[in-house]
Image (cartoon, rainbow, N blue to C red; front, side, top):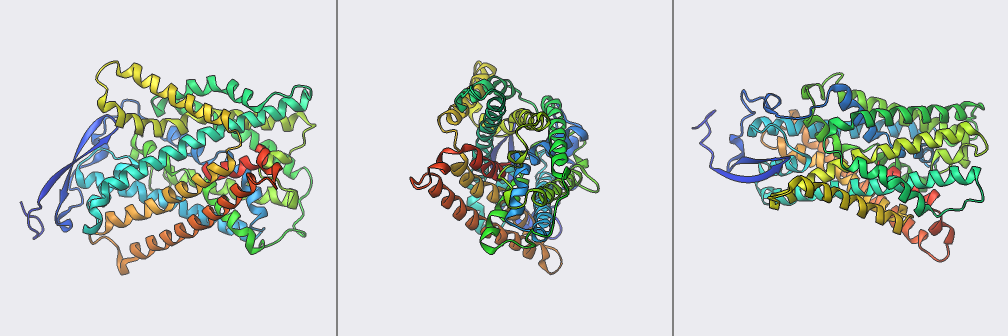
Length: 482
């Protein structure tokens, strides 16, 4: 049936897996025939067994965006300056928030058009390209798989880094009070694994809400103590650079951007909300969450750099005194909060991979899923134990994948979704997304270059300290993954 003066579309069918159901999506040979969804409301057609409320969704968003990367923000400001740093952090935060916004908006729009209850990150990319420019349609499945693989690599790498961070912090605390106990860091990783196994068995985001809320409370308490040490002595602005030397700016730019990226869990959180219409809008869960993230990162980074200046360490916790109990408590609180965050980082890629694998499983599905989850966590733990100095290697993965996921994918999806006559007045959507893609290219090149240089330094025989000191290289890695 023709509508709005257009001919009837030629319909084909593609199969995409979304959670536990198979989606049949229509593909139009003439993209101009795609309507804007009519009366179909995807929110009313979602069947979520364990929905998450607004507060739970906000807790997940904050926990994903505010991780160990915030501890590296003072170090980032050391490479940015007291004036350049806050301005660029706020600007980058707004860009990250906007990319999350257009990703969710595009997903919702495609759901209305195709009469689908919900879409994951990868499926959103696949459907958008399927209905985008004609010459890009053959790449729709490839882009979908690319996004899924990127999410899995970054999230599993983050879990690995979390385990190393927790073990490193625990080792510092124990050896500070018991200097004769020189246990290998691998032993501390093994001790943390039982908790990681329990969190790996959680299958629904709803059940992680109390864990995320507890982690947020612990992080706030740890950050509060850290702020106390920052302001215990009056900071001085006089000897601080307004703008750091040009050679330092790539490190600042990469650290600040990658620390704030949490786009991998945005759609899973929105898809499982009781009232998903509250995720966007004003104020909206996304705007509130990213507003808190931007303010926290800017304040902690600025104040930390003012307090410690050129002595600012890669993780601000390394600047806390080691002879005071309160400082050790702060380190412990943050380490426990990061350990509690393992489940949230683990559940998203596992859901993606198990959805693909379970199609060939016809018996003992639940038992095999448990075995799969435990096996993946065991593999992650084994990698952490085998190579506890993961910083330089994983920072390269984070630089490539997180910049691509956080900038390239949302901008490309937004362009493909709106390519059919919805680019706005003067095609401002096109120009805006092209600017984001240009920023992605700059970050990708700078991040890759600096990561390769760090890898060369870390494993060079001329820099044995860099290769053996996990503590100093780790926060840079975390900043690019959290």
